[in-house]
Image (tube, rainbow, N blue to C red):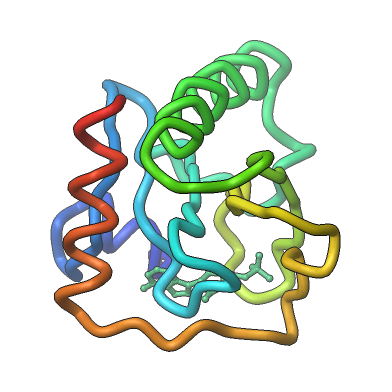
Length: 129
Ligand code: AMP
């Protein structure tokens, strides 16, 4: 069965898209830790990030770096934090979260945002990509 992220790649379920290239996709986390919380994935479905072949892992990180720069430019924050969890969705992904303090990277705290707010944040980041 395809992962929920593969269904997003296939366009079968919607996402708030931030950036895309041939092999990668970035979209807002539906349950964000902070406004601008973005997931970066390889389009090819591999369960565990650290099982990616070196070349694909490096390409994903380079894509994530460009997305992080766009988040930096679009969202007021001191840093963009990067995290890997992967306990919920078995499709390799990197979390990018704009933060001002260490406490902002708390995966138990979620931020409520409306669909319109998510749309506008995604557009702001996409514009800087
Ligand atoms: P983890 O696999 O533990 O890194 O967590 C998966 C992350 O994916 C969580 O932060 C979820 O909120 C997020 N997520 C799950 N389904 C979707 C979706 N359809 N669109 C965007 N984000 C999602």
